[in-house]
Length: 427
Image 1: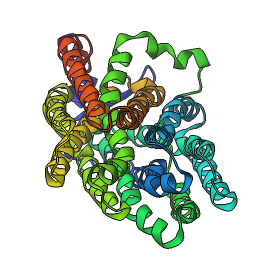
Image 2: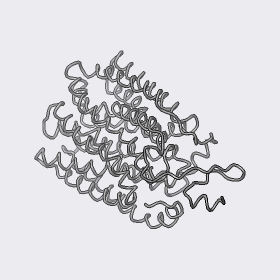
Image 3: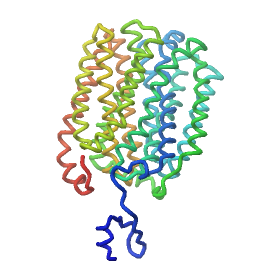
Image 4: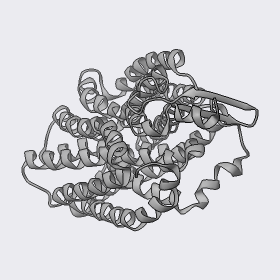
């Protein structure tokens, strides 16, 4: 049978020259058999527990601040430090994942986090400087983003990238675990003991990760360091950094800061403030895979357009400092739903444009998300100290969301013509 006839009968042509391998085409709906499910599960669990400890200082902030006598600005900087450290380390971890593989990189990063938490529990954290040092170590947990997403992405074809990246990325729901359980455990055992307790689930999940995870067979060969930075010469990489800096920056910044916000603005106990935070974070985490699936269906650009409009409205509403707890909680849930959807949509687009450089792009774009989260968390603390309220911090971030919307409107036509059409994907 001729090549054209084989292709017509439903086969893919893999390879070229004398090395030709015809394989049956997969149906678009055949998601679970199109990749490696154990690796997808391992990526999710790894990401979930890593994110749990990445934002751990946020739910513990009221108790830590009371114990160490921290100012509002210091509280904001304390919870923002892991976000910034994670942002910077994502670039390093992304490079390492491309060179030695996501699985080995993930094991190394998780061991560093476990060792840091164990040391913090064993020796104690007795000063503001100590919280910053611990936050820097927790940045390795935030850098897990550059491990989990490439690990899952490389197993799945373009038509299923949104769903695969969304499921793996739903590991940011670990922030819900931190918000729900950390304040109560801190009241029962003391906040320092929570650092040691966190090592237990981290270790268990690390074992599961080692057993289940497997690097994809098409792992790119190691390249010179300069080759990894090549995508940064393209404007598209910087646009993705802006878009994710707003969506994930908003999500992670709020996840780190809302316990402080609810405690200060409404005089809630740490446990109640943690529950309110968990509700908001759960909403944003739950919709991340839905955002990826929606982007697969209607396009990432169309999804992000709605995301930025809704998120801006929610944040603008919160910036007015609503006096009613229910109103504030509702506005945060709306904003987090939009931002969580946007997280999935951005990473439906990234592999379409930068499939061969997904490791480094995950690190770079994730870094921008961490920088956005650092800005939001630290600016809220600064606004609280200078103006007595959080409103100005929320207002500025709402305006940044509108800037991202304007940028998306500017580039979408060029994207659809230059690379989306060539790749045969809908954006």
